[in-house]
Length: 618
Image 1 (tube, rainbow, N blue to C red):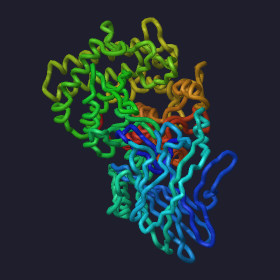
Image 2 (image 1 turned 90 degrees about the horizontal axis):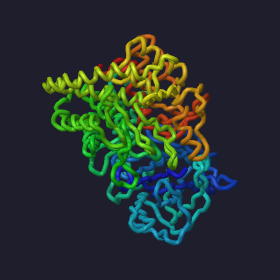
Image 3 (image 1 turned 90 degrees about the vertical axis):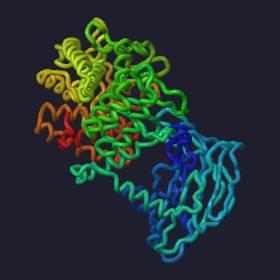
Image 4 (image 1 turned 60 degrees about the horizontal axis):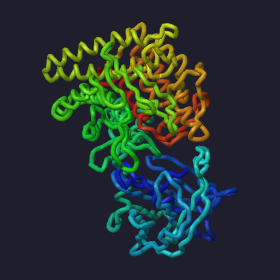
């Protein structure tokens, strides 16, 4: 697919992503040529390197083992943390004698959302000196350096046409690409010998590829997990997956990418994912950097919804990202006890956020003075996490008082109350505690759906949306739950009955006429189904939290089974990670991003806090 590449770089970290080097195609030469590449062209697969692939594993790097003509070659690929550098390690494990290894680079030189077509503007010449090939596709782009120790270079510039990307075709997008090659690198390997190729936008001269590879291996192996999680292979794999989402912005501060291949750092996703990505794994300094990065962009009492791909000004079309900021920050202080950080750097901002929400801010977001509940909505603008929009069509507008938004608002009030108590501000503590009590009282009255014994999804004046959606589970799973135990059990039962799947929660009940079970087809078809039944992996976290809170040990045993069920999924979508979404009916085909931050994070958090009972408590 268009997002795949051997060297994909963020030119304005973490955005401005470009596919610079699509691939290195390997050929073994020993009594003839054995081509290890594999490409799909119209009506043909060429070469047929997959026929020589004897095994694949993650340990922790992608590892390919090829066997052909008495030759066994193992290849490992690693990206180096914090750099635009890839390392490819070849080991000739078995051969009757010396083997020549030929490497042909194929360059794309394009934005990761686009495809390349043959043209006369792309540079046809590469430099080669002392084992390093240097190539820049267009003026202004980064130069790709490919260091192959002991290699020779043969110039042979050419375009290769019509690479086919079937996943893009499935998505209703253009799916044919041309790639450019400048020539061939070749070197000899003896049996038992290794070759480490360094590919980077920085000049790799003087850098030892083996040292880079081993340092990255040690870094990944050393990723910390609490002792109770270490014994679970699934937990360790999720920790490796979590590490992949933690990146730095151009400012040097950390942030969390929402998902691969195409998402940037979204405020909502970042705050939901932060406890699992940073707190469970003990990466507290990175968490502080994330809070600082988003706090630096607070505007009119709101943190950004997202930072666009091209690095323009942040967008603020979200009602819940800012409220999730409170929830993540509360979990941070409960894990770390670091109240000084909040008091010194964020306390004024938190009070300012509350003030803006009370008097009203963008997009009609503001507190209804009659009941203290939070209202949000603006024509043509999607504000909650159910944010699909196609042209001018907001698929799930949810204008009014949304159920999870008010659960989050209640929690934000409780967080300020808690912090005010810690900071000795008794009047503020009493003020926000009283406001929270009022919200809790009105919440149960306004949102209770007595016909279904669950909660309305949105209330707007006399209009009450009875759609059974997973948003109501947050009233049970957030640090400060809202409902009585009796109502909570009824809400959980409705969610369990209508929405639960082994991969997450459906976004709409199958009994609803608007229900869509499959995420496929054109952009219009896919976005139209996105929140109309499709299963979301991240929601398994709130479900497990509510399950254990309400059902104790029996709930914990069921949660353990749910967690174990995800082991198979780590081998079916983005290897070693958890997908964004799934079809809503068996076999629950994974869809969307192949690796989604909040899906990984919520599994880690819920297992640690709720199944193992190791969290800091509420």
